Image (cartoon, rainbow, N blue to C red; front, top):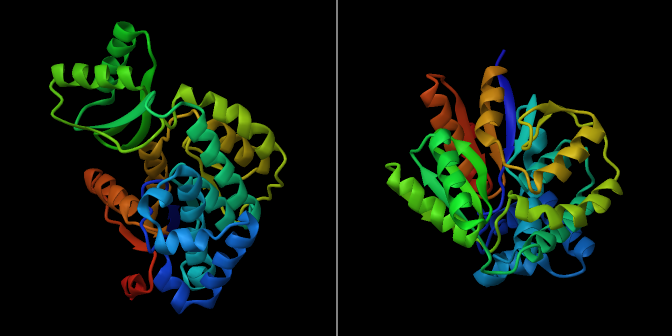
Length: 312
């Protein structure tokens, strides 16, 4: 029998106006938005609906906005969707997954991710860190380019996101990231780009954010999820509450192992993938990875009422 995975997007999927049509169409979604405003003590709903974009892009706003949108989708439509055998979320999306699976209270989660956003932004002064995507290169070549940059600059740069075959994001000190891109070009790299982010997420430079967030996460109540979560930091299926908590703590400076996450889900026989929340990035990544492996799968993204037609 075909297995189902629910996927939850992370930072970068936000846009001004996100969730507006869903709020107008679904009372359950509207209730989630009101709950978020009350939990945070400020009108996140206004930031999501009206922006401006620069305000929404602030990490402390982006993270609760994406979590809220994903939770709106689950509360509005989750009971009408195929039951999840597994779930996974990209970075921030891991919180959305845990809320959807009943492992984490939404109000606790939305407050926590706002603080996570603040902690990640303040861990490294603006301009000191950077991230860049390198496409079409092997992991070995990317790692070698990073090692060369570290040796040349004395700074930190590491692979931070393994998003799919030949899609690797690096993060670290801006000087070291630039040096790694130069080294990658010398190794034949042709497609690379600096990312428009203000901090080097998922790198050792995030250790101050991890230190700040650990006691907060230790204080949150976690429950057993309704199905296993494939976590970012290990790309392993976990269900024990303490393992879920530990994964969130370790993922802050740890790499997002998304390619390995999708490999595990495909190996487990998942053939239906449903992305819940803003954007369509994760559905695209799983389609490409399944195609490369010669597997037939269905991958769709549900974030607005017009998306519902995809389910037939």
